[in-house]
Image 1 (spheres, rainbow, N blue to C red):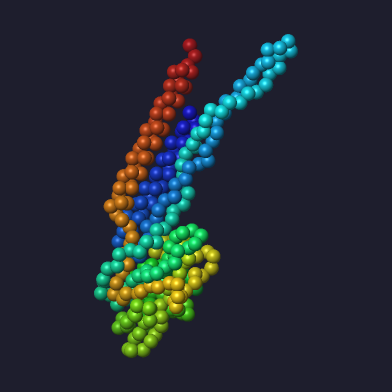
Image 2 (image 1 turned 180 degrees about the vertical axis):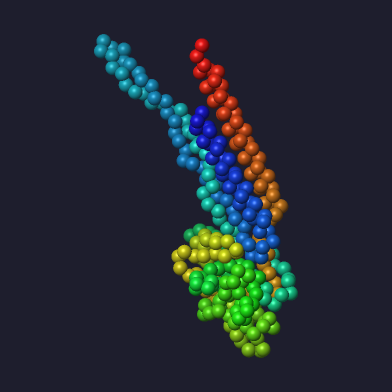
Length: 278
């Protein structure tokens, strides 16, 4: 019976974390470039139960031995193993702002090992020189004229150098080339992750790669993409599906809660009624 407590409680914890994930997805439904998280639920290892009995040989000198007979298997609960970002391309909407740039996927190779499509990112850098990646093209110009994210991360060019402009009167070509006053200033760097599971979410729409810098997709013959100025990529959160999944998670949580309450009532009777001495 105690095993049932743990199984039901594990189900409640898994559904609670799933609700938190879905809540975060819905809260970021209007965040440009946001990639929704998906939960990977796994079952704890399955156990094989056996019944052990002692049998006695009916002889003049009785000998006893243990006899084991299988009862069956039992599951020990479920847990949320990890959160996996979904890098599906979001819708693109026009904003009219010259510093807004949408990254539109073209031909992106599929990883032969995982069978997953690769992912493309803008390359940005913080004040400490750390490289990060983002799909949020809602850029701005800082006080010194550098092209940055709203969080203050510098947008990098194909040589991983910061991009400095004289104002918002600039143009971005589909290949990322930035021109100002009919002169070429820089070309936006776009990184390519062969296996998108190697990048980790950091918050504020940023990703990091713990295995070193991602290779550039600029002039990569196997990768095609396009950049659209005055456009933004919207999040890929399907709010209707997320709400449906949240209601399902609530129902699963309540079902496990009722099972836990039933076990609690059974334990109460076992302790206070069946086990009472008269």
